Amino acid sequence: MRPIPVLLAAALVHVSPALAQEADPAAPASTSPPKPAVQPATPPRLILAISVDQFSADLFAEYRSRYTGGLARLLSGAVFPSGFQSHAATETCPGHSTLLTGVHPARSGIIANYWFDPSTPRADKKIYCSEDERDPASTSAKPVVSSFHLKVPTLGDRLKAANKASRNVAVSAKDRAVVMMGGHAIDAGYWWRDGSFVTLPGRQIAEPAVKANADAAAAIAAGASAMPLPAWCAGKDRPIAVAGRTVGTGRFAFDAGKEGGFRNSPRMDAAVADLAIALTDQMKLGQGKAPDVLSVSFSVTDFVGHTFGTEGAEMCIQMAELDKTIGRLFDALDARGIDYAVVLSADHGGFDLPERANQQGLPEAARITPGLSDQELAKAVRAKTGITAPGDLIYSDGPFGDIYLAGTLSEADRPRALAALVETAKAHPQVEAVFTKAQLAVLPVPVGQPQDWTLIERARASFDETRSGDIVVLLKRSIQPGDGKGAVATHGSPWDYDRRVPILFWRKGLTGFEQPAPVDTVDIAPTLAALLALPVKAGEFDGRCLDIDGGAGDTCAAN
Ligand code: ZN
Image 1 (cartoon, rainbow, N blue to C red):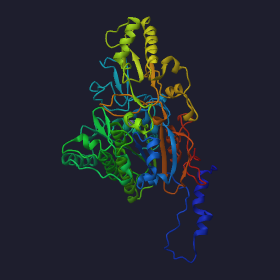
Image 2: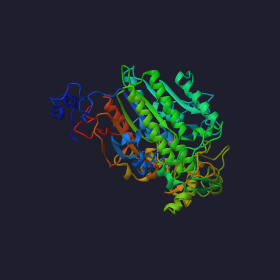
Image 3: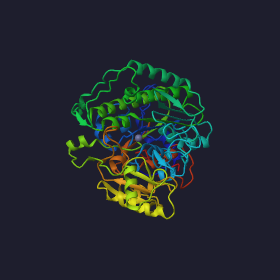
Image 4: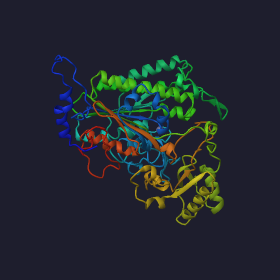
């Protein structure tokens, strides 16, 4: 649509010919004014940034005709069904780091959930994305939660830098979602750990979270019976055997006292929404002197994907409940008269368990075969070269992604070990590509249409020279890492089932539209910055502003 300067758009609110024509001189003065779709003249008072963890573009496409609640409202806004978490390492921490920073993991520094620092004194050499390992109390298993590793500001950080009155609040079941959406200057941040909402080190648990914890404790203590199966889920309700158990027909009943049954159910998302609403009331979000940001990351779609897969009755129930929960959050903001703008996207997509995919038209879906664990790779490298290390020779967080050689290798041994590692990984029949740090370091970060990026370009968008592995291993399409005994399905691949996510915007008064052309999650922050008339220096975003008004207005015009 034609760009219109913001001031002109503001003028249109008052002199719109459409408005003049619709006004009936015979009507009584008390008649409600017509509601033309005219771009609001002032920035919203609240940005509600929602992440639905593991909400792939495929899930969105599968269920969008069923939504009647909050997701249905978003369907009336600006709909980009083909957004991309365009990088290769499609994990939660990197994905959340792109949403409100406007940069790829290559610039945010958040290359994975976990990476390795072979030079750290820590025995496991493992670093968690949202910890501060300088704190001696922090371990990779029990991290001291921090934004230390995030190299860039979030939207909330930028808003607060521009106006101290802005508040930056983030809530999720996951600490890494809170930290990566909230950033460095979080006014209130809560996540779930071991059965209750907790907050940043040194902070008090505020009254809304005290109440949320009491409510959750009561719900856990009581247990719960089966959740209803919507009639339209009946076709998904089929048992699938995987690793000695059955998935596909779950209803989220749980026994009294079982915290995991509560957490891995739609009730956890509902608790996160309740806490977001309570914090809105306590802090008067969206009703202060400057715009606020409320980030809400709903984790249960991801928990369901990992525990039950993406195509069973469990995910169908979750989609129905999530739609209701998001609707309830919108209704609460409406009831308080808050002028808010919403963005909803996801940190990554997902892929179903191969046991069901094989029955559903995808015979090539398979679980990974042995050979790529760090122990197996180390054994192969030792056999090829005779090289050993005092500790572990190889470090990695799974059978794909970043893989590291020991930091103690001599200058002579390192290139030999690297060559043997590359050769071993490339020989595995389920490996699609292996790239070395040297190959990635010389490439520019890719730009342009993310669906056309080559695999090495996707890997480059995930690459940070100081944090990335000596090699990155990418598995072939439709290969599920893991044997199904823990998680039955996961994500993290460079394939589009893990990269493609919906990006949905909504604000009262904007003209809705659907734009099927691909966009990128790094476009979200520039889009919201323009909506807020927040000045950002050229070159600070990897993404671009998306005009989210399908009418004559241009929400990017302030840029
Ligand atoms: Zn995730």
